[in-house]
Image 1: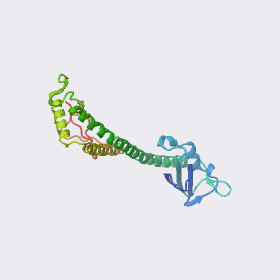
Image 2 (image 1 turned 135 degrees about the vertical axis):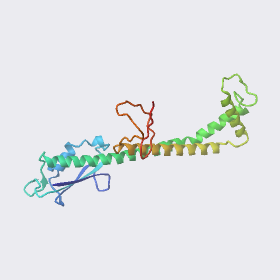
Image 3 (image 1 turned 180 degrees about the vertical axis):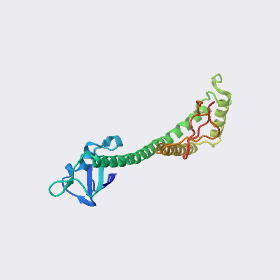
Length: 247
């Protein structure tokens, strides 16, 4: 026999819960759905929650069985009986493999949704952050008193590295000259959010690529198989992971 299966999620025609589409030798089976081998396995043998599929989701279960000896049941061959044998195992394995593939797609979809929500939340507060930074710089530069920066700080005894003090003085000078404004700060923050967001997306894609297939070790140079080696942390790459000898 040949078993073909597919699992879908969503759609306008499906109802909440499991929706079965059964075929025997390419002919659809329309009756006795609850007694069919497909319904028995899908409802009792598949843990949908483990594949990030909720009970309220619209799930389409498609199974086609082709064979010269299909174990039909009923007076009019209305459904296929669950034999708990090779056919049962094949249908369960086919559905499980479909669910694994669907889970990967759902994980990507959820990650993209979380990424969009995170970016939206960060961008929402960018104007407030830019406004607060400008107000703080104006207060430090003289409109509210110099605390640690400027030509005549009111508290010169504040412990601060000289390098940080120079950076602070340079930023205050740029702010006074109009080079650093609220608009400039907001633009810089927006660019940073976009860059970090793309870096996280690339890291997720690389992680998915590494976890979806088996990797093999390739050693460049001589290596004693009887000697234990220590390696540095793997350097990620879309095509491979690179490790150096630690010592």
